[in-house]
Length: 326
Ligand SMILES: O=C(O)CCC(=O)c1ccccc1C(=O)O
Ligand SMILES: [Mg+2]
Image (cartoon, rainbow, N blue to C red):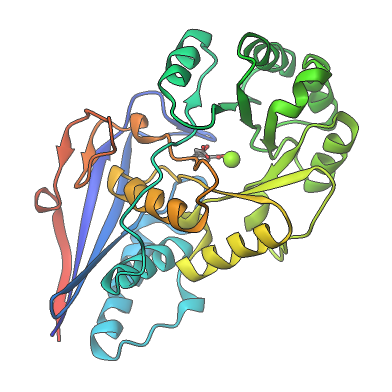
C-alpha cells in the first residue's frame, strides 16, 4: 500500500533577513512524506521568494496533482515540475529507496556579516578547512575591499568565499579589488557573481586574478557549463535547480571540468538543511557546503541542525494539507 502526506509549515525568521528587496518575516514550505509498505521517504519543497519563479501556492497545487499520479501509476513527468517540487519529490523518492547516505557534512562555511570578532569566534570553532563566506555588494565596494583585506591579513590560514549577487558594475568591481592586496587574492576561494553579467565577471577575474563562481548564472535561460579562465566553482542550490538527478549531473559536469561544486542553502528549514548536508557528503565529499543559514530562523523543524538550540517544531505540529493512499 502506498500513502502520501503533505505537511505545510510556516516558521518565524530572525528579524534581519532581507532577500534582494524583500524582508523575509516567515519561511513557508512543504514536507512531502511518502510510504510504500514499510518504506518511508520525506523531502522538503520550499520555493524561495525573490529567487524561485514559483510561489509556495503554485508548488503546493502542483505537488498535490503529482502525488495523486504517483499513487495511481508511479509515473512522474519530471520536465514539467517546478524546481522546488522536483527537488523535494525526488528526495522523498530517493529516501524511500535508501539512496541518500545517512551521514551528513555539517562543516558548513560560516556566513559572516562584517564583524571580525564574530568571524574569529566562528573560525576558532571550525573543524577542517578554515573557509568562510562574506556577502559583499551591500555597501560601497571600497568598504568591502577594506573589510575583506583586513580578514585575510589578520587570519593567515583563512580562505574566503565572497558573494556579490551581481551587484557591481565593472568599475565598482575594480574599486573593490584595488583594496585587496594582490598577495592575498589567492585565498579568495571564489567570488560568486561579482558583476551584472557573466561576461563582465569573467573580465573582472582576468584583470584581478580573483577566482569567480557561478550561482545565479547556473539558472540563466539556455545556460551550459563551460571551462573558463578564472571560473573555479559552481554554487548549486538544489531547491532552485531541480531534481536530485539534475543536481548530480551538474556536480559530475563541474568535477569533469576541474571545478568545485558547492551544495548551497536556499534557506530551507533545519529539516531541509540536514538533507542537503547528507547530499553534500554524498556528492561533494571534498567540499565544504554552504549551509550556514539555520541561524536566520526563529524555529527549527523536525530535525535540529547540530549545535543549534532554537526551538524545534515537529511535523505533528504542522498542518496536513493533503493526504491519500492507494
Ligand atoms: O551559499 C551559502 O554559503 C549560503 C547560501 C547563500 O549564500 C544564499 C542564500 C539564499 C539566497 C542566496 C544565497 C547566495 O548564495 O546568493
Ligand atoms: Mg550566491
